[in-house]
Image (cartoon, rainbow over all chains, first blue to last red; front, top):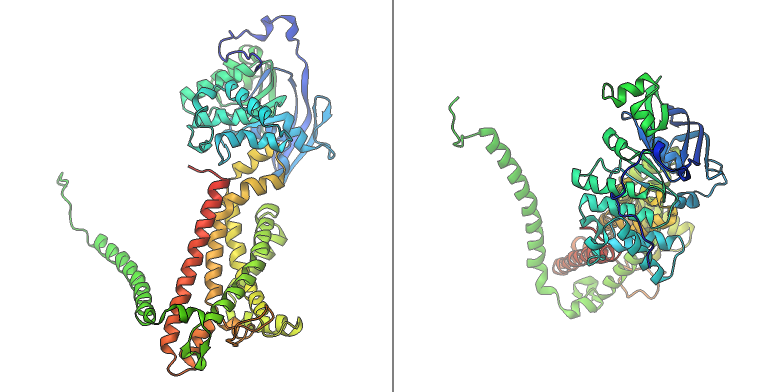
Length: 279
Length: 287
């Protein structure tokens, strides 16, 4: 039996401030004085931010202010980008992410990522999900099949693909591909999900479906989502952080609960951005 | 200007299309003429006896049995050596060095220079190094190794292109899923790079099987059936050269041998495409 999962989009959204006390925030990722350079070019500078467990945190701000770079430093995808240097401290569940002895493969298993452009592997739908599972040591056929069915239900794709699991993943529509990529990340049971504008390459309908899915992840996963869509951030985020380019590098301008950022911003730049006057 | 949808005569358009069409006709025409000539003169000589018996009377009579065997052996040595080295180097260049690194730049530059070196130079090198220094003498092994040196630059560069044409998204998403570099390479990048490898293979085999200059100095002239890789063996291209240049009255068999060479080349290319296609479809499913 697969565990009952909340049907995406059916829970009414309640602002953080009005939720019961059991939702007390508990920092899961703590970033201190983090800076990132591509060669000589700084991407962002001195970012200090705490991400709370089980909540959705939205990173907003104009293009080129280091939001995506910030995400990729959290799962150390920056390691494979030539010339990329990261300085500062990241603690994930108390572990030092940037330490040289950290096993990036284990880290990335705990921290999944969804990219802007859906990028399923050029394999069958089934293989896309089976391949990472096998790589991480799951050999039992029945267990693999069960996990795959569960995640495909989770992303609402099961009924659409159950009869053509062996057909190419690239034949799916853009929205379906993105949901498959979410399933591929979820099948490894990560604790954190990094999402880099997951809806921006999709049509409005698919975008809505994916957005509902993200809302359904609240509570089970710690979600960090980069988005240019302020309305979307307002709809789904519990916390928000605004990045902006200052002195040639991205800076964290303000962070807080989504309600505070969108309704009572402290920084004039945040106020101008969320009201649509700038950015 | 009159509002009309009727076509008007455009001189430049006509000139450009004439130019493009004549170029295409010229190229296709030359190929057909060449193939037609070989077929016309060679086809009536081809028989089972011709393909299996040894040459007699300096090749004017008899067949080309031992020559086909020598050619196949030389080509096998060449591919057996150059394929693993080629794919390995291509992986190193495409996946483990950046465009700016000194090592990558040096290797790429050397390969580009090597691929432009005339084959006679490879022949002299092969003779000096494989035949004399390593003491392999005039042998199929020397010839195959020399051809491998010649084919490697083409093979490496096009395989490298194959790897580079794989979208970065695959590498990033594989890394984000915690897949190791080796897994990513074997299961995703290598199958996706096969088309590039295939192009290199076809070009390389084409160059190797048609090679004369490099083989005269390394695998030699002997037209007997080779007993081992250390025997000298005459390749098809050398046989054709010899028959048409040194043997009066050898033209008919030269044509027939050329026909065999062309068919062999087409067959190898066809098989390579077919194999890659099947291998690819088993490993990777594109739309």
